[in-house]
Length: 352
Image (cartoon, rainbow, N blue to C red):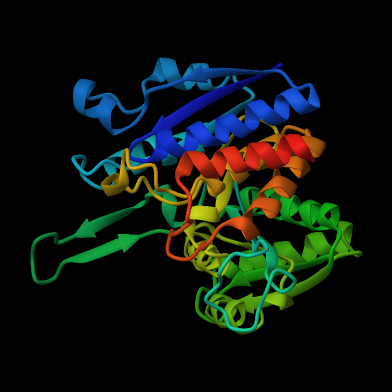
């Protein structure tokens, strides 16, 4: 029995979560998995009504579940940053979800803006450090409000934090067993403190424990260029929090857009959280037009992390059988409603 906390969130989040849960229920029945779902109303509506974002009592409850399934956070009537910091970052940091895992995989029939590239070329994974760097929020203003104002933002990178991220990345590369190539993405020529530490840790760990893994290094700006020109060069990439945030959005567009991009905030020893990486898209709320495949794939990632590999593979196969049947997956145009796409995946799942 897996206890899953469900956080539908804001905007179109509940709509895509419904389809993700529909598919999870179907695969659970097929693979004889028992799932207990616990709903939480965290998000913009609760904040506006009560002033609460993430009460301590709720956080303690979330520590006891097996995983968290999140829809989307972001409300048009709540100032940007309040929910993101108070809920998303608070969960990532409090639950020590120190890995952000982002597969970049182009499915059959899905449009990509990259000319002459297909599913065989676009299939790589980002491992992003998720608890340190600029997102720690350290810094200060000097002479604020004056012509001499200075804003200082600190990127904090600890050897412990880097090592645990690198270990996960090396192990994931070995388990993935494709090119067995791990690329460190950084900026060693400019960020000479942070990425000196990253590079030293990367090579020391590789020399000691992962001689079977091919190691590579690329500056972050060059990585962005090569993701467009030669995405087939990559297997698994590991990077810090800030760079990871940027390059994974580029990766989402390469694989066909936010509507199909899923991600996981992972604590390998604790509670992880899985979500479609697109926003809440409030202007489309209730219209049944948002692509739910990212939420469905996030459910598959959740099952894989819980050890239910067969069920996770079944979901991905079903999605890959559905995508060629959709009229278009560019710019959010599916030719089907949100719920219809969920139904198609369930049908493929049960017929396979």
